Length: 179
Image 1 (tube, rainbow, N blue to C red):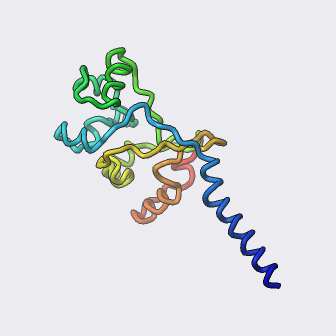
Image 2: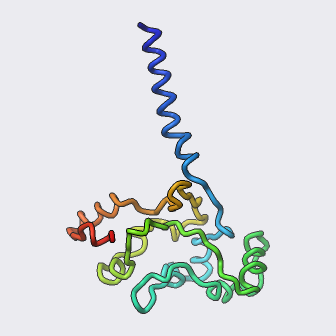
Image 3: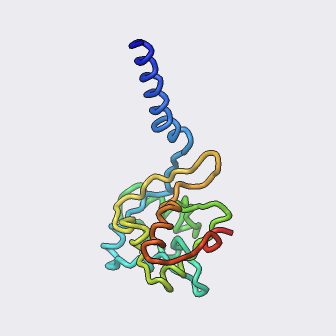
C-alpha cells in the first residue's frame, strides 16, 4: 500500500514537472533580437520618455510600430560607443539603409485585430498601462515563439484585455476584437 502510494506520488510529480518545466521549453523557441536595445538608455540620452517619439501612430490611426532605420540614423550615423551592438547597428543596418528585422513580441492570430488608435486616442490610455515598464527597461526580454502556431508569446493575454474592459465598464463583445 505504501509502495503504491509512493509510486503514484513520484509519477504525479514527474508528470507535473514535465508539464510545467519541460513542455514549455520544448513548445517555445527563444530567439535573440538583431541587436541589444536599451529603452532606458535611449530615453535618458534623448531627453524624452515619450514612447511616441519613436513609436508613432500613422495619420490613419493605425500603429506604425517600430521606428524606421532613419530614426536610428539621426544619432547613429557613426558608432557612438564601443559595444558590439553599436557596431552591428551602424555597419549592418544604418550605413546600408537596411531596416532592422526586429522580432515582434505581439504577433497574434489572424482572427485577432487590435487598434492602438482606439485605445490611445479615444480611450486616452497611456502606453505604460498595457506595456508596463517596457520603456523603462535596459534590456529587451527574450522573444519566444510557439513552435506549433508560429505566434509569439504576447505582452497581454485575452483575459488581461477582458479584465481591463470590465474594470472600465467598456463592452467590446467578441467581434470587437475578433474577426
